[in-house]
Length: 239
Image 1 (cartoon, helix red, strand yellow):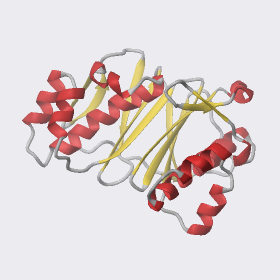
Image 2: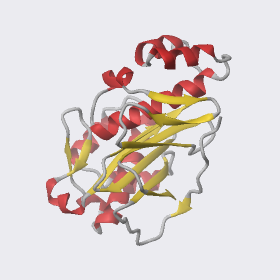
Image 3: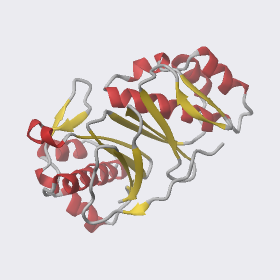
Image 4: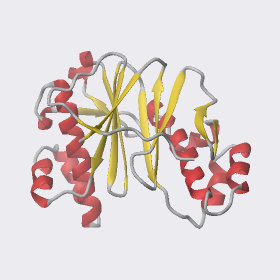
């Protein structure tokens, strides 16, 4: 099964976020050096220090691209310069807008894998997004047994080997999107029940007041967004 394909539209210059809107931004992280330099100039001192801690240049550049793009995106909604965006952090490290922006009601979440990132933005709704590059893994079955419920693990194990990575990462991104929305850690993965099959879209079984949507941002990627409540309108932007 392939998750629904969405049309990634060029974002308008003046983007508006209505109360029932959910915006998802697709961000390419492998950028030319001049663009990276411009983004790096908008980072805070702690973000710049974090970027320098990456051992590999590729990882450092992708962090700068992701965090700088996040600042630029949030700056559009707040009508401020990217470098003026300020963050606070939850106990597990999840960033959120600093208290001076609380009146905006803006909630966001960022996920990246390989050369792609997704940023989800909502207003007065909890939101989480997860993105994974689908790849073979030697420990896939043991990870599924550790982090998935028995029924989920049995489904992964029952599939032909070539189908297992795709379904594994669909389960993983759905669970992780919810846990990122709530700020809980990866240790809670096995407590989140997701219902899906190779031919049917995922549903979040554990919590009835949350909605879950799978996305296909590019070939060989799995992604999901979890949003508090229902009745929201999705728009997908290409940054």
